[in-house]
Image (tube, rainbow, N blue to C red; front, side):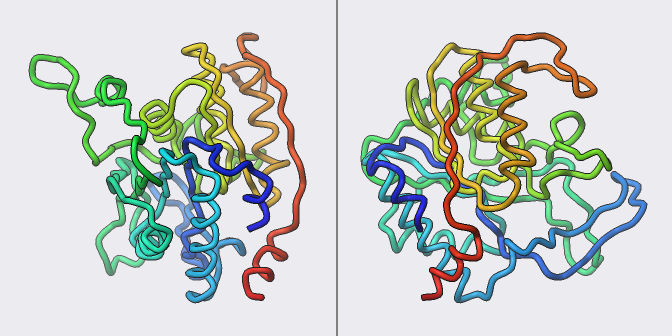
Length: 289
């Protein structure tokens, strides 16, 4: 894929990827739900591919990730049971070593609309490494673990992470009150991954930036611990201009906002460069040829 040719080989320490799950198209929706109002299943053009096309797409971007990762770099891939198979096979085909599959238990999972299967309350995050000597900040992860031992001391981080879907002030919404992005990931998820598997001055790459949570997490963490992590975001939809760029500007200016106004000027600022490449349709067409 074109974007990976723009990034220096062996330069990225950590990749977090939240790719399309290829689930759109069923049009299921629920009106006046008592668990949170109207709810619609994801139905986006970027999330619709034929299976062979999706397999090829997954393999190509995973291959690109390997080229830019450092020899001891890590990749985390968000997925559900629908596309975990394609992700695992692509990682194996590109000679990654899978270290863990994290189960994200969604404590406020969306309701089951068909009433014909169990409610889906989990997603997965695959952690794989390119080579030896990967970063694993054991003590930091112990401190981040909300579960403690009986005596209150820190406990080893497990591979089941319980946290809610984005809600409240964390959920990005438009003027109509609807979510700006259908698959926004929790800041806590990115916080654990960034602190646990990268160090100061490392570069974090997000090849499917979506709502910009990776950038938000990096900026917030840099402010908290005075580190100098950097990030590269890639987005092929108009989310960059409508969500990511405004979000990065806001968090760089202030970490606290209410009703569109900064409550204090406490951001760390920053200089950000962005470039435009080919459009999504062109990328898909290139994969077919």
